[in-house]
Amino acid sequence: MNTNYNPQESVMQPPDNLVATGSSPRFDANTVPAMLLQDHSTATGVWGRLVVHAGTVEFFEVNGSGGDGDGSGSPVAAGESLWIAPEHRHRVTPSADAEFEVEFYRVTDGNENG
Image (cartoon, rainbow, N blue to C red; front, side):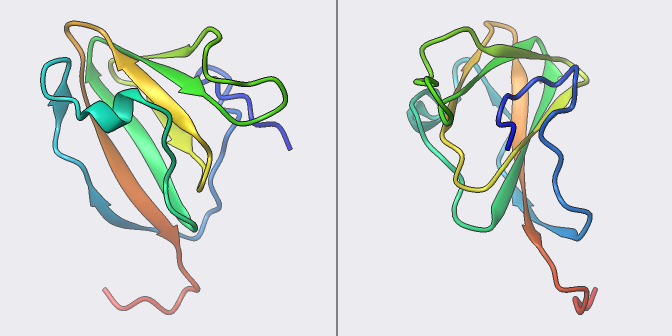
């Protein structure tokens, strides 16, 4: 499985049967929670989508062979988004002018109402 995250190449694609379950507030460099700046992951079965509204957010993937989150990140610029697979460890570093949020999704069995 290829776990390299590159928004320009759209490497990580979620399944088609996702349903939105919520989103974070919009963060900037001053309001981003400390936990997002450190290695963390989404819960089992929860996909995340990093949505950048302004500036740039550097995304560091921690999973994979040799990936310790200390290498070069993948920049996600204003107007771009990046999918984050369930349980994949990662962290972000926003630019001084960044504004972003994280949307959350889960796989549905197709029997969702509404």
